Image 1 (cartoon, rainbow, N blue to C red):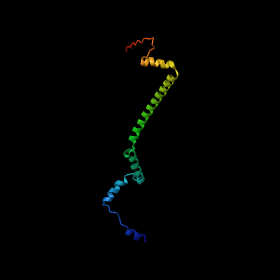
Image 2: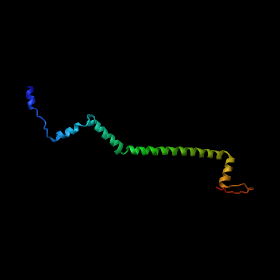
Image 3: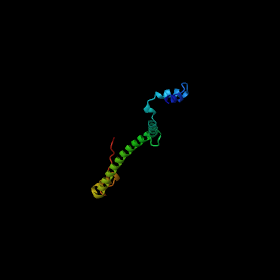
Image 4: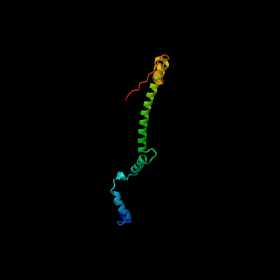
Length: 120
């Protein structure tokens, strides 16, 4: 019975085109020929390079986010300083008088104002 099965089995052709391709394919390690590995590599390359939110776009956005956060901190400190100055102007008449004299060159009726420019 076993001899009959051996005789019926066809032997592969040695001069076949596919046999030369299979020899080249056999030199590639098995883990590289795995269909799941190939699918993972294609999926990873798509996400890293070809997607709308690829790696380079995300790096640029993170840099922009850092600069915006720095500017946000700067403007928050400026707002706090302006609020403090406004509070002083509302509550302290001496501060209000100082601002009026320095910035708007206001004077009392019996005073003369002399402006001396500073030399650089």
